Length: 218
Image 1: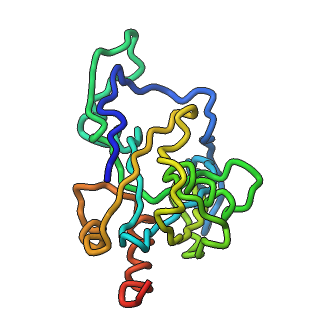
Image 2: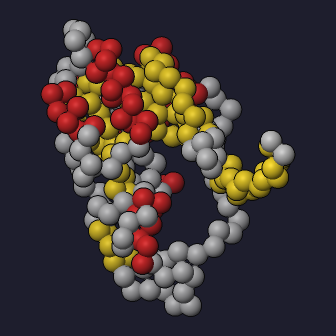
């Protein structure tokens, strides 16, 4: 199940980062084994992510969205003009830069990680879950070479009656998220399908589920 939201981006270009809101570039200077080093890094928020499984219909509930960073690393993205004097007239499919992900969000407030995770599940997928419904999978260290941020991974089982809205994220904040369902019998094939780009945390969470639950009755 996919509800298409948008099909293209237009007038795209790249340029220097000014007045950053979510990331902060910085360097660390240090000496290790007698060698002086300077390391370039980016400080960013920690995050949460939730693997969702509908036990009634035996489907995993994931999300897809356009990721500018993934797009910019594509062949098309690498051709974008740098800081042009005029807005370029270009258009690209959002399928370039589209990723398949767990429901996730950044930790940008003082709430506990599980509280933020439950809120993100409702905002992005429409399922209402309590923090007591969340099973802790692991705490992971992301971007070890650039930011070292922490991600809290959870698992939640849901039923159709818990879906109180269509989800899709907060469009007033510029979120355009598609809710996707992957049948249980197709999930391992999905993990290794390189035509569907996905974060390693998503792959890890699914393999955790297969190891823990696949041979058991939900």
